[in-house]
Image (cartoon, rainbow, N blue to C red):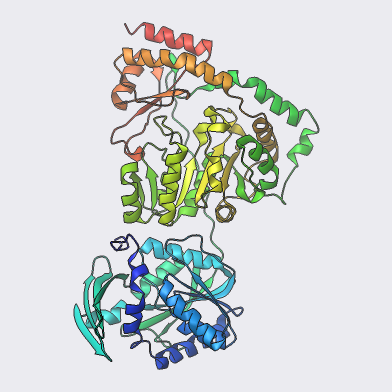
Length: 611
């Protein structure tokens, strides 16, 4: 179930925790209760935290943060409510207590890490979002902790609440009247409803909430999946009191541990097949129009010195090649980027795999007509994956609260999103706390001037993937680049293996990029041949989709029929196309354009028999 939104479009909690809520809550969060909770928090922090730097997540009006600061802890309080933070700031100023206050919507603003902390406390501020959002929140919390840092997470135990849960209640005190209307949904574990608050002679106000109510076992599972080790579980703010079904409040003490590494996926070998008159699965003849540039790059790297010495070149001080690649990429794309914005990896495939790791636990949303590589990897990791369309993007961002959105440019059909459209997509994702991965592996044919790499200067939630495979005909180098804002690059590097791009291959790749736009001749050849190929395909009854004319392939509708027709002619094509995984609702067939005279002659001879 998605996080509820008010008519304003905001998540419910941005409107809920204002003055009216706190007028009611003041009768529950008494000074005596706060003193008991702070005594417990301080005892645990003194005994278990490696230092005194404390982050209070969902600090509200600062009742815990101020008291801990008075006890000598260095406290940072974070909350989404502007009203609550103003009260906290006023209280701190009045008493002279030093606390840093920050306003953040922790479920929708990421990355939100503001510093490194020895401990994080989260008291009665857990459950506002979806389960994936809560898991992402916990993972962000772990990133903000020092190794061995402590998370103290308190939550309301639904096992204790369920037996006393009432759908309607009224509270009155000192000129205040609050009427509660709630509905606990067993299947989703959420309590939804509203509170009508009347204060004195003022007009009543209604505030809505939508809270996920957890069993302790569910919280433990989320903490474990987020990378924490649960060391102890207390009950009702009493050190080492065992939690039971009647425990109203349960506190988890969880330690930041190192993340586990996964196994490397292996790729199956395709089955042997019969000989074909012409193979249109790809365009190996592209290299004929780029060979001078490629040869020049290899001569520059390998002819200049000792090949064995080059093979021993092991850049442990620059494991992601940012220092070496950033100057070349800056010139190539006409955009000044620092070393902390570039991550080199084992081709686009390796970088997309790392992005899937970054996206966990998901969900992962992908735009229709894109390639399914990243969503497939994410799905194997247990992430929910959803295909959407532009007209449904805002709706699905709200509905699924994805951690990542995948956009391909060009798409499987050969369409390109304009820079203006991309800006709209990335901004819509940013407002929902979603990272965007823009896969430009196939955009190389268009030249560097057509890339959207410069967009990372304006969007801190955008990663652009480039490679040396498509167009450059150097996929064997296994070199690709992920370009993003510095903080997002830092997070991506948590998933990308260091030293993923070998030094020799990287040197060749950078020399090729340093030559600028080397595809003019190839584009001219594509423009010359592609209309002929399209006409022949249509002549045998195949229906083509629209796509950018500068790309060396065409896309055919009704893949099953198209494969059958082409196989009868002796034309080999890929055995899978853009079906449901690509968001079409139909399977499409991608047919490469033959570019060399030899392959073009074979193509023409084959189709000459189709009359």
